[in-house]
Length: 341
Image (tube, rainbow, N blue to C red; front, side, top):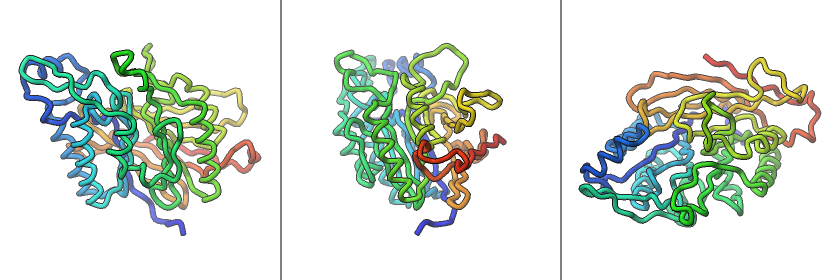
């Protein structure tokens, strides 16, 4: 029987965890940090410990980590992070993860000693599913054969569609981690099967991926939005999936398609929302605190940081029982409702 009690859960992304044992604070490490993009790598361990502590205090039902779990896919970083996630689960909060573009087959994996960067071990996709078996993969209702995507029942009536949008199989050949992302046609087909299964169970789905579905900046930048974002958008809309949680761009932003006030070619388009949560590794070290009400199917989101419980960006969104929309008359569509506060 589906519970009628609201569910509390969190989403964090781009934790970029670096095991302390991989750096000595020396010149090579300081130079690397100073030339970076604002990630607080010297305090990587403290930040993750703060997240563990916050989860212990507030006890969300589950925590989503939507990719770029580690700095550059270092095996030691993955192993230590998995140990911290085990502590979170022992506190009563389930954890669900997917990889980002930094996490697998990454030839940039490094340790830092004195004035030298030293190549260190990275992990493969098989290593990932073994290290994080207890954080989504073992509980999966279904797994995609061609990627590390899976779907899981995070709570009664609420499924998470955890999409692996990263491209990493050629990283070692290229000599660098590929930044851009896409969703394979076979994965889109698998998603449709997941939606059908969810419909049979009268479950709602929240979609999670590392890369962005929509553009979150007016600046001319590449590699953040999915390469096949329009194809993916059409597929998600057809499948009745109207909420995506993403990361990657290190910005806090909420976008909708069609944008408020815009008229789409479809006279009755399903609004689709992409919430990009900012990088946890970058000040102000935010994550999203969310709730799901199974009775109204309303999802709420507001930002919180490990330093403060004050929300910075808030939204409410009503999602629907998942079904294949082309098989349903438009009069039966339950409209999405969003309010930015």
